[in-house]
Image (tube, rainbow, N blue to C red; front, side):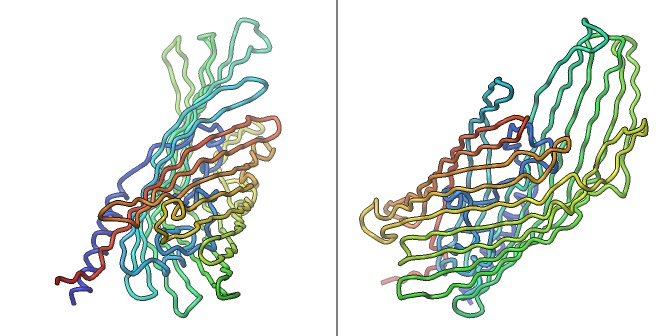
Length: 438
């Protein structure tokens, strides 16, 4: 009875934390102009140990780390521990276009997740993660063709993003096989504006402000099967599936025409019940080879069917202005990740042998078009370490540190090179251990 009360208490703590982070909205984690397209810049949605391998996840099931990207992995969580993982990042991005270079710095709270085993072969996890980020501010100027003295300036600004809180379960019905599901609540908003102004005060300034406010659900399903190859070798197949659906958002476009000399403005609002944002159906498959629980090598492939998703689009073709759902604005996104982790001896008395050494690379195609052309392709690489925290009262917690490089580039558009430091702290406490008094 006492054990049941302890478990019930931990579940209650988890639900309270889930309710608390639901009201939290993280600041944007990007300065990229590319976040003005689609739903914004897609988040990694991985925790500290994944990031050291550039997001590799689908085949991994760790007893002391939470792998949100495949909920089937929760069934492998240690039976005596409560695991709490929190992460943040800092980055410097270099933007380059037509020989002009600029740098931007950014820091962001990334995620907070927790998990524990509820029953034998049955694990639970919950937490907060970003889904997309929107954050940019830039402008461009040109001279009107019919006037050498009148300058036109376009100013672009955007902020916000979509976040999620989730509660997930993983179950292993028999040895080597597990299934899992995450149930999430998507929420957040974004605002994007384009202001076209002129140095001649008699020409009207045109402002287009696009907003959306999302409240919806999200589901992720996962499965893993581990085959024993030899006494020291095993191979795990991981599968992931996310059903796509409409998430609402009540997208709205305000077009404001104003004149600074007369202080007269006119606003036209475009909205409607038929305007709804969408998220795509996603599929993932991954393999992980494990040798003696020391060397782990894996590869993931994910497909997001953005090509079947419509987007609210502003059009003024033929003098007819409209703001309506349009297809053909997105394209399917493919991503391949390869990575590895090496730990000479997880339970060794030698500190350096207990460190987890990680590395990974990935390549992803864009999910949107820019003026009819493909958006930026993404290449990235990372190196990381899982450093054990050893003191008189705890030798199971881990400090996950990784550095990554991300390059986004597209023909005739901005090239971005981002250098990022990821820091994740995984607390591993023996909350469920039975203490004996002698």
